[in-house]
Image 1 (cartoon, each protein chain N blue to C red):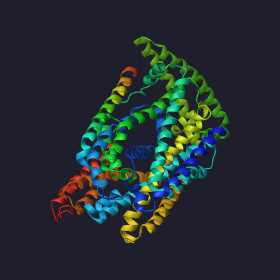
Image 2: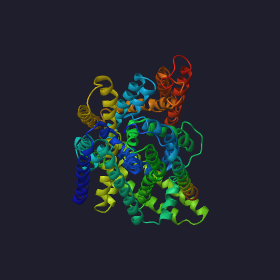
Image 3: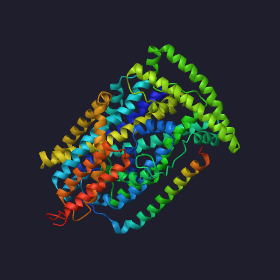
Image 4: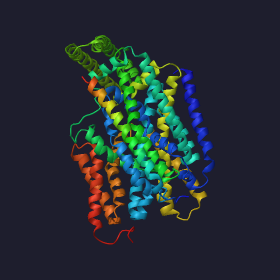
Length: 42
Length: 557
């Protein structure tokens, strides 16, 4: 059971999709932080 | 604290221990005890990864940092999503697919025994000490706030943690982490909700007040390698820090080794990539909210109640005089804060902000005098950043929610400590006991040794936490020493992916990397985030240079 190998071929598309979602979420978060900084800075 | 709050804390502690013991049923082999027979779903592992990283220091120290310094600390995490993606295609498949119990075990397969033992020893030294310090931070605050002897606070956190970690192994740790993570998020959201409801001004006005002090300045694009919190140090240095922490530190590696498959292990790390920055933002915004709230409700002059009591007893008249000045200054600052919220033209707002900052400066100078007084009386470090949010919670939150937050702080402390005890026991048994002392030991024997090792490291952490104040300089030295090799160990793992690298190159590269980082640490002002990058780069350079000479590496043989 410990020697389970990687399953690259059947997991890569799902991983890539998740990756794109991660990037989208990060951009949204950074935009919100940027908005707070721009509109409420001294 | 009200008895209902205490009841919530007791129910939480009892539940964690009972649930941990229940999870011990599948831990009769070392595979079950150390890596849960690689059976856990990605979301369990993902929450466990996040709970391990989020300690009580985050709940009380980082929220306090939000209150005093604002949101710019979030920049340190900007490299985390990228690091998780890189780990998902490099170290995670490499370690998960190789069937190892520890990250260091892999280094022997790839290089040699000395590289494995040296890195494992560095891990034991630094994590053993850090486990004590992450236990000490909330224990000291609980002691001061509830008037408990420090040893009781340490036992309150340490004892249940050692019990469920020892009995249930990694499964108990992971499942407790899931519940603890939910509790932590609920507690933070509850504090946020109370702040929004009880805030005397609108959320927009609260943001204006916070923004006028610079607390909403999340980005600093200046390229200054001596400055810790900048966009570039976060994205570049932070990426290397997160690669080191999540990819090579056994306390995190052991989390993803429990995942059912490589893909689930990758996805568990991506959960942090999604949620870490928003979560850290929430933690800091809670602190900022407390800062704004305290513009309209007068906070204590000293947040540490033990120091406050000592100063009142020893320098009562001087402290009373300071409190009178503080009350007057507070009234002036409150009206200045309201003026900032009400100003609707640029020129009026600029004037209002200037007045507000001047009055806020006056408050800070009075607090500095009070802190200096506390320092003279107690002869202790007087920074009270860690006490700001706990004091707010206990005085302003409704009955029940305060107990929930205290349980959340305990959960944050216990989830990190449990993972570290579990990892320390694993490295002790797998990388030293089984490797050097008793290679043919049966699982049943190794299990007994593992439980003994968990108890040993638990006691070690409790002793370090109890004597943290006395051991202050020693702990600082060890933590500083620990930072020397974080990036360097990452360098060794990166080297493992380069076919021409061999054992002596990795070992000497590690020494060279640590020495270089030591130099930068003591002789320059280069911020520590950059030192991880320097360490990794030196190990790679030396390892590759030496790798071109001598025998072939094991992977090529």
